[in-house]
Length: 263
Ligand code: ATP
Ligand code: MN
Image (cartoon, rainbow, N blue to C red; front, side):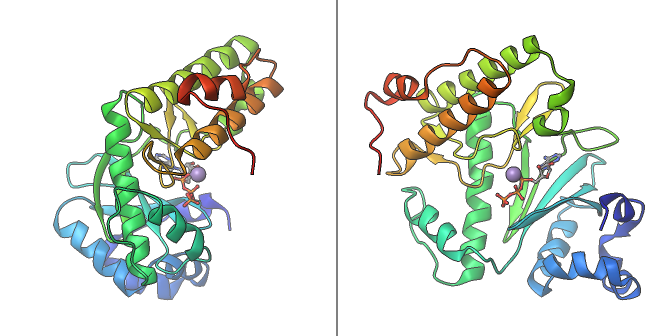
C-alpha cells in the first residue's frame, strides 16, 4: 500500500475504531499496531496533550511503525509505535540484557518492548545533551514514543533517498560531520549509536540522526562491537561515494585504545 493513499486521510485518534472498520486496507496497517494496549496508550497520551491527532504512516518497519501527527500545542510530531509482539524477541532481549542501565530485563514480551521504547527515549535525551542533532524526544509510554517531527510538509528524506543529488563536496562534508558525531558521542557522551547508516540519517536543515533503539553506553560489553560496526558502515558507504575515508580499524584503536577482536 502506498503511503500517500493513507496520507490523504486524516484520523482523529478517538475516531479510529470506526474508521478502521470502514476501510479494509487501512484496517491492515492500523490493526497491526493498534491493539488494545496501544489504543489505551494513545488515549492516555491524548489526555496528556502529547498527541492530538495522528495521521499518515511515515514508515512501516519490521518492529515499529512511524506515524505523523500533531500535539496539543500544534507542533508536528512523529510517533513511533512498536509492535507489542515482535519477531525478534531474542535480539531485543540480548541487547537490553547487555545494557548496564537496564536493571531488570522482562521475560514478558510486551514489557520487554516497553523497556525497549523507554531506552530509545533515554538514548535520544542523552544524545541531545552532547549536541548531536536528533529528533527531540517529547514523551513515551509503554510501546509509544513521541518525538519532534523532522520535515515540513513532507517528512525529511533519508540520506539514501537523496544520494543521487549530492556532489563530492557534500559527501565530504557529511562524512566528516558523521565521524565527528561518532567521536563526540563516544568520547564525551560515552555512548554509541550502533546502527548508523544512510537509512538512519535524515537530510534536513542539518543532517539528523534517527533510530536510537539499539544505542547504548560505552560501559556495555557490546559497545565496542557496535562502535566498530558504525565506523565500518559509515566508512564503507562514503568510500563508495568517492570520499577519502579513514581506516575503521585505526579509528577504533584511536577511540578505544585497542584493536577489535574478530570473532
Ligand atoms: P527499527 O529499528 O525498530 O526497525 P525503524 O528503522 O523501523 O526502526 P526508524 O528508523 O526510527 O524506525 O524510523 C523509520 C522511518 O521513519 C525513518 O527512516 C524515517 O523515514 C521516518 N522517521 C523516523 N523518525 C522520524 C522523525 N522524527 N521525523 C520524520 N521522520 C521520521
Ligand atoms: Mn531505521
